[in-house]
Length: 151
Image (cartoon, rainbow, N blue to C red; front, side, top):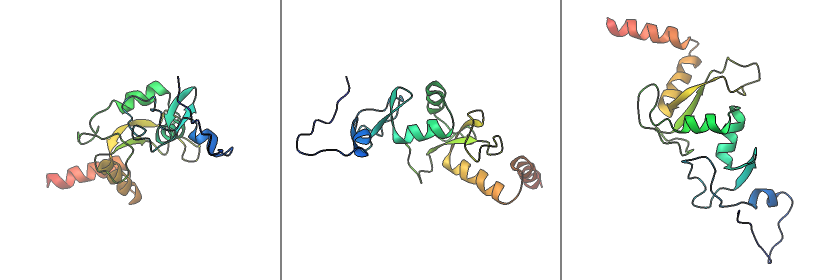
């Protein structure tokens, strides 16, 4: 049974009521502890309670719960093998990033779900972004780097 806000002192408006109805309930994604401290509201997404961060990832990458859970179970960066932290924290060098191909879908940046390649650390994700921003194809750049380092 879900806890609900029983508030006889204050009335909740129609905007706040859906956001706060399940406030403090745990996210149904295994390993997500964002809600444990009661700081993030929980929403129903496709019939399950999820925190706002997990809901955004599920929606933005068009992932099923099982696909997202598999990605959250990845413990190391798939490029550099650094241990990952999946707790949605920006600026965390060990923070897990969904690596996806921006050129896969014509949906204006929103992923179709088939674009997700894996999970990498924030540093590798940033490095890939810098390479793309330089105008190089990442694979071509990697070959150039290998050739350079062999000199």
